[in-house]
Length: 302
Image (cartoon, rainbow, N blue to C red; front, side):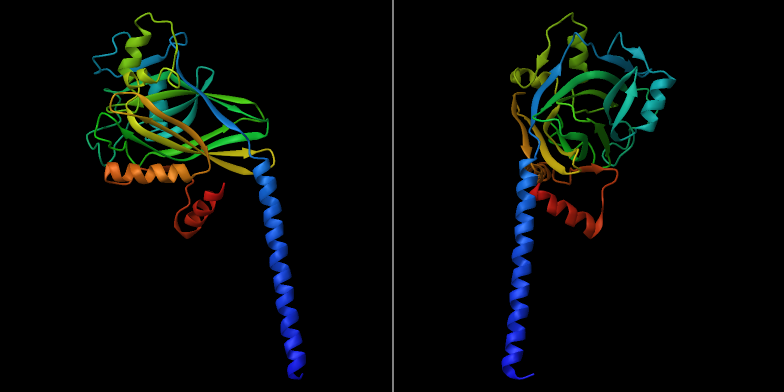
C-alpha cells in the first residue's frame, strides 16, 4: 500500500467514525426529545392536617402526656420492631401508610432503646397529595432524603435511617399519602401539637401550602427534602425533588416540587453545612461504590 492509498484508508476511517458519532448524537437527541416530551407533570397539591380524619395516637406505658391516647399493644409493638429506623410503607386497619419510625438506637441518641415505654405512635398525622398531568405513572419510589430539626439546632434525625418506600400508582391521576409517625424523642412533626388540635374539638382542616403561618405549630423540621423517582408505564424513570423549609418564625417559606435532582443536591449541600455532618438517608437498595456514584451522577439529567 502506497502513501496515497494509506491516506485514503485513514480518511475513510475518520469519515466513518464521524458518521457514527453524528448518528449516535442524533439518536441520543431523538431519545431525549421523546424522554422530555413524555415527562409526567407532577404537582404538589396539598399537605393537610384534617381533624375530621382524626389521627389515632398510641403511647407507651411511661408517657405522661397525650392523655387519652391508647396504650401500645403487641400489634403496635410488632409494627414498631419490624420498622425500626425506617421510612417505609405499612398496612394498618385496612389502610396503607408511609411510616416514619425514629425509634431505636443510633449514634446521636444512644439512650434510646426500643422498649416503647416512652414511645408515641400516631396514624393519619398528615396527608400529602400530588396530582399528575397524565396517566402514565406506574410507581413512586423515594430514593434519598434528609430532614433537619428546627428545635434542635438543625441537627439531623440520623443518617442510619433507611428508606423503603415504593408506592404503586398504576396510571392514576393523583396520589394521597397518609403519614404515620413513631418517636421516643425529637421528631420532624410536633405530635403533641397535633394531638392537642384534634382533641380540642376543632373541625377545620389545615393545608400548610395555604396556611403557611401555622406550619411551625405542627412541623418540627427546618429543612426537609426527598428525592422522588417516578416510573412510567413505558419503563422510563423521572426524578423530582420535594423540598420544604420552615423559618425560625414557624412559617413555611418554601414548598417546591422540581424536575430532576439538582435542587436536592443543592439543598443537601446546604443542610450538611448547617448540620456540620452528613445528613442524607438512602433507599435500602442504595448502590455503593463507583457504580452507585455513576448512576447518581447521570440522574442529574433527569
